[in-house]
Image (cartoon, rainbow, N blue to C red; front, side, top):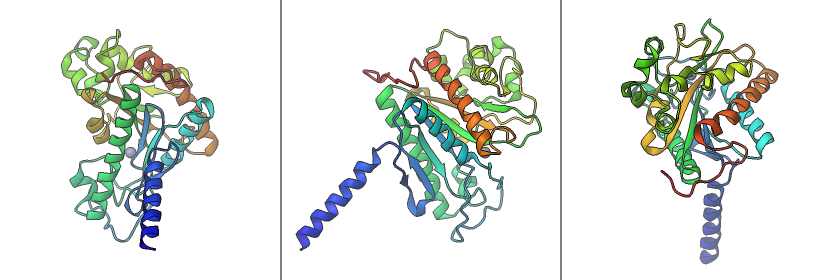
Amino acid sequence: MRLLLAILTALAFGSVHAAESTPDSSIFGRHNFIEYVPGDLPLIISVPHGGRLKPAEIPDRTSGVVDIDANTHELARAIASVIHAETGRHTHLIICRLHRSKLDANRELAEAAQDSPLAQQAWTEHHDFIAQACDAAVKQFGVAFLIDLHGHGHADARVELGYRHDSLDLADCDEALNQPTYINAGSLRWIAQRSSLSYSELLRGPQSFGALLETAGFPATPSPRMPVPTQPFFRGGYTIQRHCSAERNVTGLQIEANRPRLRDTEENRLLFSRALVQVLRTYFPMHLGIRLDEPKPVLEAQ
Ligand SMILES: [Zn+2]
């Protein structure tokens, strides 16, 4: 009987591990605070501020921002659904289900979890899952593209693209932006090291993410139309800084979606998701050398 139990346990344990590598099959951290949906694309979307869980065991954070980015979980899942419908492929999703009053996963640990061991655990899991997803993508394709997805409530209705450069940085001339100081500080460094385009073109030229998004019908900055964002503007936070590393072959950006027309209703989330996927289908071959609908594994990671 004991042997049978051991075999059954081993089988169950084995099946758990098999599930870990199954695209589109969720893995949860402790207490289900963090959800990871593994994918089979070099695209990872993390969503730190859309959670609604408020467990009593975690005290409310007493400093920092505590408002959630409404409907960003739903937006991320809509984007993944559109990608799956169009390509048959799955996006890696990392979703923090805790309300921001309990955990801010896009901050350094001290501000993020404010001494709650349960929140600290969730923060660690959130970033471990992102790293795990990026590692899997790099192993398979040689590069990982990370989008940290947010929603902003700024008066200027445009999508804010955070490459770790604020409005003052972007007010600098192109010549200055093309210097290593800026390139090395930005989340597109991996692309910049391989691109024939200048760094300022990658940030706000006609082939930039912002330009493509505007062509797809959604005002964005930085872009050729608005190369210098009006303030306030989110430049990209902790997650992008920590995970987008040219040495580890990870690149990407923070996307801040305004609410009306983008994430307020299910229909609008679908329309924005379709536009964003159209952008990614152009951006991936142009800047990563990989097609979104037919990603070709590289022979050897660079
Ligand atoms: Zn946010």
